[in-house]
Image (cartoon, rainbow, N blue to C red):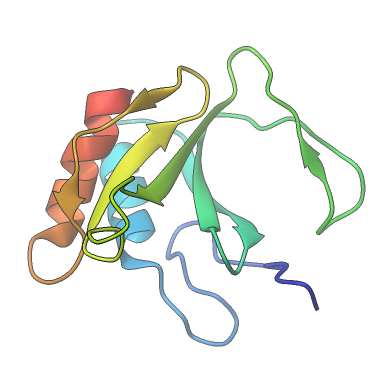
Length: 124
């Protein structure tokens, strides 16, 4: 295995081994409560999954599909900050469709999910 993430539950952001991606789950839950068709999609074990808002366009065989960048396809990524000293403490949300990046937020502890949702709404 070279880091592929084969599956993840699209609503609970839980991998088959029990790993839960808490920030992703919070964002998907909040977007769905607002009427958006949002799901967590597998990517790889190094970058983690991404949040798909709407319908995706992919070509190829799983898990090696090419995720085409098409008009109307919105993928949100939870990414570290550029400052390597804070990369593990703070995160941002990156909107692949618009190239917008949120303000940094603290990604651990109580309130981190709420901050991740705020950041996701900032870039949508």
